[in-house]
Amino acid sequence: MKTLLFQGDSITDCGRAANGGAGYPLNLWGPGYPGLIASQLMGDQPGQWEIINRGISGNRVVDLYARWRIDALNLNPDIISILIGVNDTWHETRQNGVEVPRYDKFYRMLLDWTLEVLPDTKFILMEPFVLPFGAVEESWLAEIKERQEVVRKIAEDYKTVFVPLQQPLNDALKLAPQEYWLVDGVHPQPAGHRLIQKEWLKAAADLIK
Image 1 (cartoon, rainbow, N blue to C red):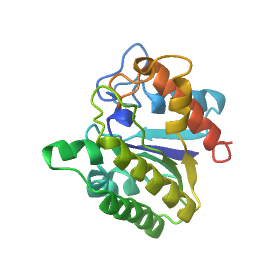
Image 2 (cartoon, helix red, strand yellow):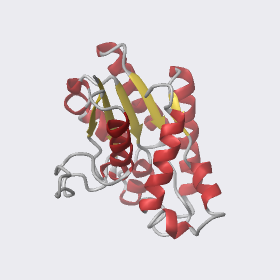
Image 3 (cartoon, helix red, strand yellow):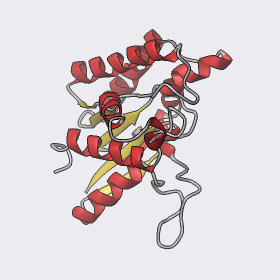
């Protein structure tokens, strides 16, 4: 059995601690993209997966690092999927952001620490994304693009899976307006989570056979 761990902020968390009932356990995966992916993998490959969601709303990359031992290393995952970055920009509105070079540094520290302790662990790095409305300020856009480039370069340097999300979202705007995909420029609507699920499964196909 392989253990798949989802890590990130509110997009990954998606109210996992509050959603349950009618056969769906409380504090499991939540209704977002981790829950969609987990349901598909466990339904298609019975008995082959343990799937854990440890996303926490509001987290920045430094918050992941602070809890990485208990919420990642101690779980002994075979695969870690990470989506982090928007709060590193967003929290600067209250002078608590993480500038891009430090974001890069801490992101790499997460991977280095993991590979030191669990050298066989594989990573799936997901591109942070926004659409320019709602909570998203114009001043964010260039910085978010820098963070996207950071994650892409880390994936290249560490030879990990990279899940592109910004361009698929941009393309989706040809089919439906931005509010259909994201509620506020950051957090996905159900259709947005479905889009993320599809892109994740496509990018990670070789790891989840």
